[in-house]
Length: 166
Image 1 (cartoon, helix red, strand yellow):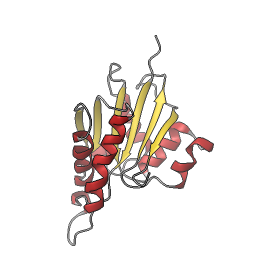
Image 2 (cartoon, rainbow, N blue to C red):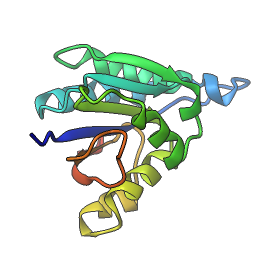
Image 3 (cartoon, rainbow, N blue to C red):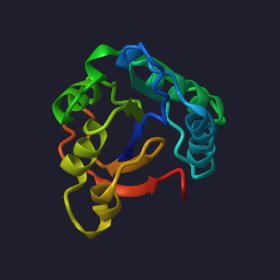
Image 4 (spheres, rainbow, N blue to C red):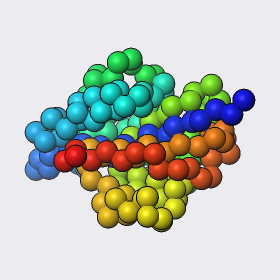
């Protein structure tokens, strides 16, 4: 039986830029604190509830995930992966490929330009990915669908793209 797997690629919500704070430790700003729960409500309301998440270790990604997951109807398991800070498509794919087959919906929480590069690497540069090509803003999420396993993930179809302004 073929199973559709969904990969939800999230960019952290809008962060603050406090003086003297290293990049990894930048917190969410007021807009990010507002947008992240909205993303969680959108995901839950559209049936995109991950069973598991892999999140960058940066403070703004951890805070984003806490607010997103807090707005979901059920709480996914989460692991924090230092390799997702500054990750490109290969680092993201390495994280995805170690996920067990029984997980059918997975969230990745990361940073630009890696989140858009991963999305376009998997879904291509067609008409349907134009919004991603234009801009993957803070607090946005791409929902990708594939019939393959996580271990073999090489292509996917963009099923939905959420931006906070939508």
